[in-house]
Amino acid sequence: MLLSVTKAMAQHFVDSTRGPASNIALTLPYPPSCNHAWRKGAGKKLYLDPRVEYFRAKVFAAVADLKTKNLIPSKPVEGKVAVMMEFNKADRRNRDLDNPVKQLWDALTFAKVWQDDSQVVLALSFFGPCRRGGACQVLIQPLEA
Image 1 (cartoon, one colour):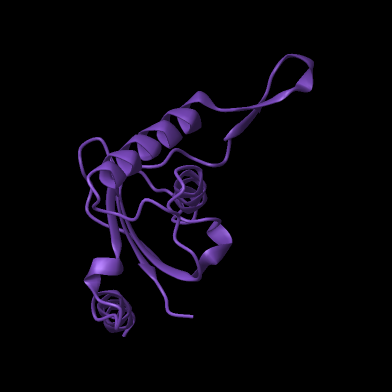
Image 2 (image 1 turned 60 degrees about the vertical axis):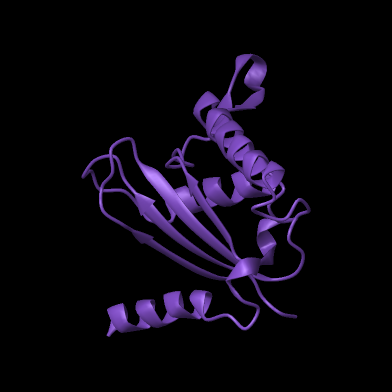
């Protein structure tokens, strides 16, 4: 039952009335944990963990490259969006599925793929097969207003 619902939701992304040209497909590194994204430094000053900064920089570079090649829109997506995310862990350790989602969405906001992650009104996330080094496949579909 769940698998058929998941397949139906995934098919919704493909069979959009706006067509596949409006979809944004990205292959990104596996996001770092959000459990310790913010750290306390000297004087209790908060700073972003270097692994998170590195991930954001990788996402920014990947998105900028696709924008330069005109493969995705140069301006942030406006309006509501649906997102499908496949997370490929680097190993078989147990992880929470919701943990990488927030880091991914924050990085996509930082890279100006969309204006804000509050635009996401439909999200489908799942773990795919393990992959050396880990990865994340993302499909973003603007929804009609």
